[in-house]
Length: 472
Image (cartoon, rainbow, N blue to C red; front, side, top):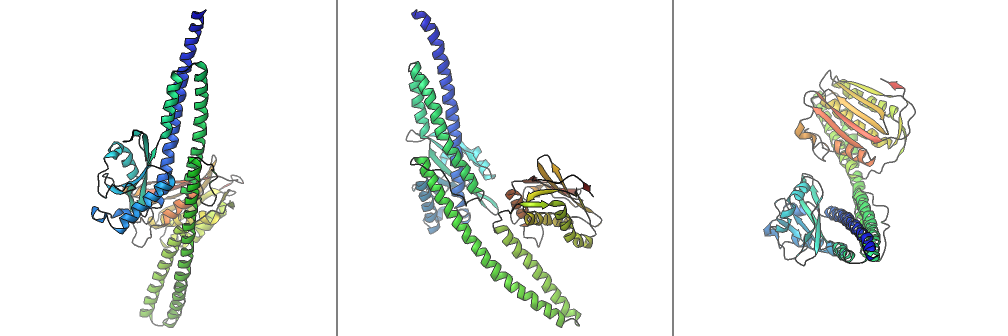
């Protein structure tokens, strides 16, 4: 009888042990993944609050400067507020720029990060990364999340957020108890492990989603995660951070409104008086040419001001059902004179009854920028084609030209703010197009071969449409 019980009990215990090990492993992986994403989210949030200029030029000689002390204080304050172990900023050669640890100075080599070289290289290419779990000097397990600090020229530094993975110690104790307990205790541990994993990962996953939402600029809605535990405290802290960012954003919008008023009004006055001056000098061709030069430069200045304001201003889309066929014809009609002046042919291909739920003015602005760029890049007797069509669940827009094409080394920088190859360009046109596409939850890509033309392709989530009567 005893042997029979043992014969059945041992396989059962073995199966439960394997199942318990599997539950432990999956729980550990899930928690580590969520913990890594949380650290990355915190690193991204911290990077937003760091001015790139404050880290780009710090040297060891600046270790006691006001800028260095202020940056160190900000990191320490953010570390205490979020309740993580450490926050630090390093350059690509693993030299310290700032650290919440007061014993670390500018220029000190960050030996601890040498194991994360691959991840750090990824960050300096604009990506995000986390380290593997590592054991600190106190014997506890830690993990680091990395995010880039960007300037207009690119990534200038990497910020790391180091957190204590205390939950792994708890899981290790649960595993040890499970392996040396009876069947009932093993079943209880398996059930408890699953419940604990779900309870821990769900709020962390929600916090990660909220951090991504805030990172995308959607800061109006408060974070709903509450509670008296560490996750609740983190949610409360992130909510305060959201309010601070929203306040700064509102101040920026007020400043932009002031710029619009203080700059555009004088430009309007200059335009009026230059028109009067042109009338007065109508009989003097030599002086009239100077007035025409003033008016051309004035128009150029107006475009520069408008480009800067349009890109910096928040653009929450106003989504309405829009007749895209009419919108496309309006865009080409507006630019037809520019194309004729360059002897470039423009064509429009689209179903006559094509509609979608979009922000009409934003999409119009994006298409004007893209078609105008295509016309300017196309030599005489060339062609520019704007086409629209439904593609599965999406709306496809393409702008094709037979221009000179774009060099391969410029393709990755096209949508970077202030990048331009033209003498009078601001470098904000394509960046604004990318911003509009992102606000519509779409995507944009470009194909180009030097000497054979370029294709810009916009894919937007499709709203309702009204048929497929094609018109060329």
